[in-house]
Length: 531
Image 1 (spheres, rainbow, N blue to C red):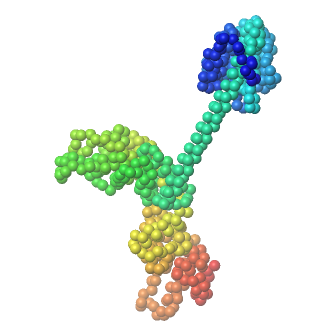
Image 2: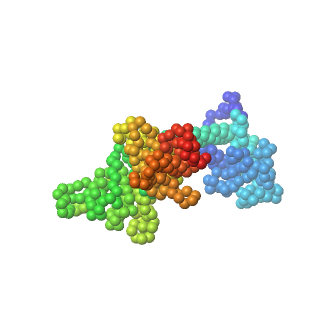
Image 3: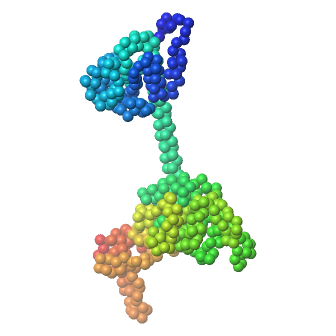
């Protein structure tokens, strides 16, 4: 309802202003409802007052959980076993005696609400709704008291003003709260979107160092970005040649420590007697030959990243000292009585099964769990064979830039052979193959199958015979017809190459550096039955 100037009190007093101010200063709908209930109960000696809110779904009424009897109660609006459903559905106040309510309305929570009240009291339930806008329902005001008291209260113009103010403030706070929640949700969504977009951009930047478009590599790059965002110790596990050193450098590069030093050491490549000095440093005179003090890698990595490759080969005594560095950042150089501190991020790598080494008491379990705060497993090349083409082309370009060679490519036939190989040495083995093939390729030509080194595990055909380029075994003394010897060798060479490519003449011709038509002509002349 709207209060006009002529309706305002004209007396000298300002009755009710303190109570109105208390309502206005309520910071939330729940605080407002508690304040209104307290004012009504105290000012009119009511036996009981409860202000219930209507859930956003419009399906049920509930209390605010502020310690009252209604804190854990829910009243479905379609359940007419309690009086609130009748008031909400009819849209007007409901009045009935408590004795009648107890006999007619058997809702368990409602009965619990009024169980302690005298049966001679009356109950009034007033549905509340906003007075502007869509006039949305807000909830219900329930009061129990003497019949005469309730009658005077409902007839009092001050109560009407009180109820109007309550509804206006309630609607305003609810809408404002809803807007804040929507804004908070939007900010959270934007933040998540921003984080997701940022991580995606970083992962795409990583693609230049960690090559491969396979799902395994996409997942690995995302994990690297996530790891770089933390200061957790990272344990890289994977087979030899999978690129653990590159992943370690990428984690450092994309971390907050990227401006610090990146120090790396292979624990398996340094004798045990020197490894401790390399890591922790030593004081002057710490041992024979220590003519001057030396900073260790831990000191040099302060503020940056320390990469320990092949940590599975670290001696047990050093493992205990490394654990202390990880736990509290403290260490002591060899021969020094002074303890130092280092703030570093540790990335460790191994191809060994550390759990087995723990069972064999060759690796500390506590160090393993401390290292594995953020475990990453690198996929072997055989699980991402679709990346071989991209890797091979990158290695060819790298060779040309490194060796000062003119740009060269790699033929489809060579790529096909590369994809058919097994790679126990993973990416490192592939790179070595490409380097060899590039070195064997003449300037101006692309890498062909003939430039690739012969496979150590030469595949066998269905008959069990090895498929390889046949050796020319004839000696000078045994050759009596040079043309016939050359013809036989050429026929055997073409036959084996066709077997290698499953009868595909186009690929066989390319591998031999011949036009397809020339190969077809030779097959007819040599009477080769190739499909």
